Amino acid sequence: MKRAIVTPDKHFPFEDKAAIKVLCKAIELVKPDIYIDLGDTGEWESVSHWQWKKKKRPPLEYQLPFVVKEIEDVNKGMDIIDKSLDKAGTKERHFCEGNHDDWLNMFAHENPYLKDKMLVKHALKLKERGYKYHKIGKMLKIGKINFYHGHHFAGVHHTRNHLIRLGGNVMYGHHHDIQQSSVTHMDGVKSAWSIGCLKDMRAEANAWLGNREHNWQHAFAIVDFHPNKNFNVTVHQIVNGVSTVDGKVLRAK
Image (cartoon, one colour):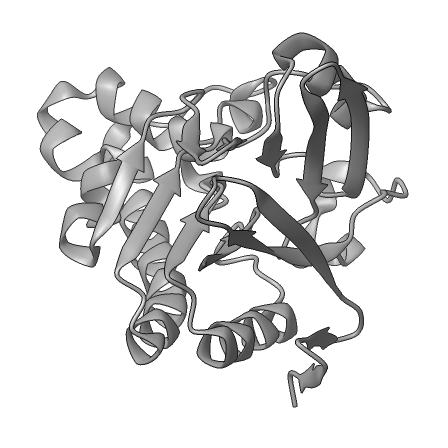
């Protein structure tokens, strides 16, 4: 049997530090064979198109230092997780690009001479880190379950919508909430999982919400893959910096 740890939206440098500490403890405890990052690893506020909706974009020479700083910050966040993956001996690593990550790609394509450094796969040194890169929207299939960022289908019952549209097992992030739907077909049960987020959920860290309430939860998933390609999923919610894995309590402090 092989085990995978799957992580949703971290939005470095706006991650929830306690949740990341719990995740790292889980990695070092479980020692997964596979690690899957579901994207929106960075916030990429410096290249967000939303901030220029009501004002003129500044010259590139003004914007570029902020982009470089954010690239450094996101890399530092990935370094924290990679350190635990190295301790755990996890060799197989996957990066499923998210829509926020793609903002950096768009910026690089707008300034072609930056593409060698600022496409996400280059900026985050994915090859050097040992990650297999999966372009935004592409499914990573392992056994009988698919993984991707989660932005294709929305709605209140987005896991149900994924099942109806895809017709197969899928796990994703993007929506920042924990949700599961299952249906039984003639060839067996199919399920969709939304596994929350790992970002800072406080209002002051999400000013763009305008103090609206949200339905977000901190979590990560463990997937056990059996030799016959069947699998079992456990979603581990992190509440106030505490979770449990394999009967052990993991605390951020």
